[in-house]
Length: 274
Image (tube, rainbow, N blue to C red):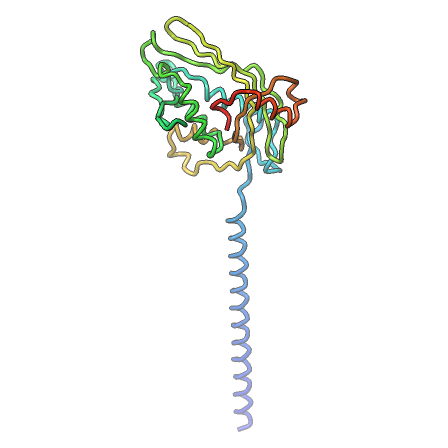
């Protein structure tokens, strides 16, 4: 009888130990799942590495999300403004055949500040995605107002073209973390194809640029040439968020904010000012 009681006690102790060990193991697995869940959540909330394009065109991960090379900023401004105001009347070529026989640009209809609708060139519309979204719509509408309808004419005697001739792009001046002011001195030359008559308009502007996060298009293989062109405007991790008149009353680097305001107030407001 005594031996039977000892056996029952020993069996009970083993079952109790097994139950406690199993329960402890379940608790451990639960804690492991909770830890993994928190890690996955942190990964999902973490910003992806910010790749910026260097002068040689190679993208690298930036140590500072707001850091950009000065020459990269200058090239970004030059490239964007050139694409915005070079109006040839033809679509940008995407292959060798289109380079030899360019397709006519039918233009893209946009809303103007006056409430009407006018056309901008396809290159201007694509380049406008290098602007901040709140500034882009009004700016594209302003470009539509100054784009001659003759740009879209297929008649060689009536058609017009335009080219932005950049004379100088000043070194970027940092105005805040991740924000720069870049001065540009240029001329917008509009030419009639039939008789080569030209109209030259001074285009001296202050462009406010800021660093942004760049997210590559998730379906690059299936994207169209137009989509690729639009997303290529964001690869430098920069955007233009305001354009003002450039003051040339003094050396650009010596101007302070008070002088800039005085210069801007002395000039007539134009459609390129935000």
